[in-house]
Image 1 (tube, one colour):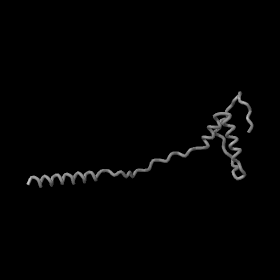
Image 2: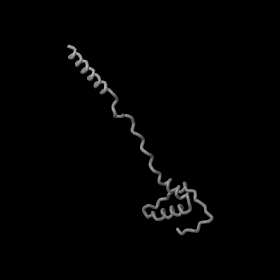
Image 3: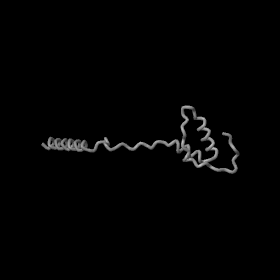
Image 4: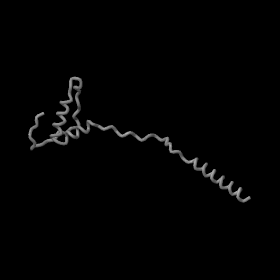
Length: 94
């Protein structure tokens, strides 16, 4: 009689353990998704490159002139650019 009682006790303990393990938290997080990274501000990057050196400013101007067409002749703010000053650089043709 000891073996059937012991078998039932072990079986009951296993069933209880399985049920308890099934009651844990799920891996499905219902919280809000993480925020998307902010978009890259290309205008700010262009402004920083143009303000870094005279060569950067000239390259910025040349790129603006090259990208202009009749359809895209829209003004672009250059308020974020502080033109660099140099006393030693040679003049550059635009």
